[in-house]
Image (cartoon, rainbow, N blue to C red; front, side, top):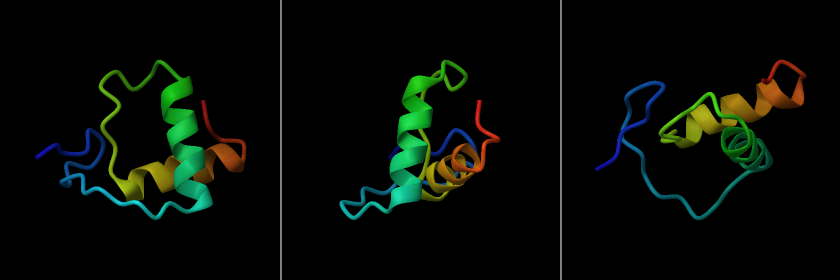
Length: 57
């Protein structure tokens, strides 16, 4: 099972995505900062919210 490269939690598949998670995925794939790009749902949501507020990379 894959683990999140940010918090270490196991990554679980989830078909239902909210807007913050989708924004996080877009930010994750568009930046080169995260090499392995293994983030859990909560970390993707956090990244998406930071990006939405203008604090993203």
